[in-house]
Image (cartoon, rainbow, N blue to C red; front, side, top):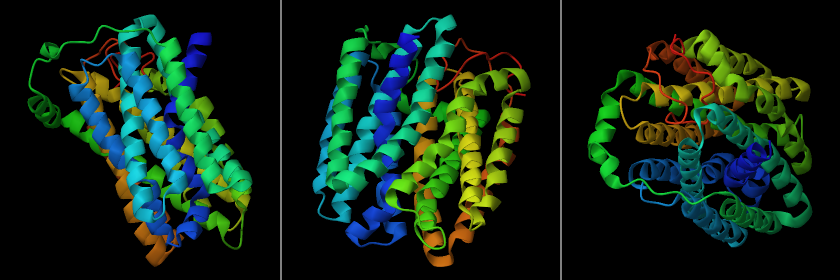
Length: 401
């Protein structure tokens, strides 16, 4: 129990910066005197760094001691986080968010590798479930903290506190993780580019990369710009009240760790389509002027996309013919790139055509992802300790139905 709590806490401290700033988007837009679309793109620029680092770590970090790499990444993350308090303009803010993404993703990917290498098959399910729970908690409590801190300490105070959390994550990693013997580069059967090309030629993997892109496209598109809708008439929430809205992630905190079991019972495709149906059902509610309806809609979108992400991520490790670690890196790179594109495209639609057009774009992304799920064909079974993921419990030969 204590071990899984530590894993969840490390996940929380690793990704707490990623979405926390979304809760203060209207405040940031006013501070920098820019449009919602411009501010939304700047805040989500961290996904550029996340995509680059995810791929780089998967391919080239086999010689890194996991404990040293994770602790160093989180310690370095504190630097751009603190610097955000002093960012003089939007360009500087954007650059610092990219650097944050590089550090966060490096720690994230190395932690997944550490868990895969150190957990037995019987322990892996609980460990990955704990890590996923910490990720979801970072979405919820990171936003709540950011809204509260910005309201009481101002923008600068908010970023200084988050920098302190980064340092705490580095200390936790150093004290709780054991040293690991790094895997030599010769263990790779092929050169990195050849490995990437092989993964891209795998139809099931290629489909899962696109699906991951669409999942974060929809998630970012929804949860970035809904902040501006909730802050303006007729709802008009304060910064603190806006943070409280993110209790909509509580259902996800409970349901997401069950995704692996759902895949084992009814298969990846059915699980995925069902999750996306839940997310899609919430979209019409986002167009209503009642706060209660919007909250229910956001809860549906959050629960559906988190559940789908767990199912799709787990599929990657099973579908990879070899080197599932680099396949996971490609998936994460595509996933985070989808977040950046979602911030840009949905932001422009929101600015030019309004919130209904933005919600429609999210709906198209979810529908396309569900349609592509039919390409998730049966993949070879892999032991939980070698498959990626944010969640791998209970997978069997029927998982890709």
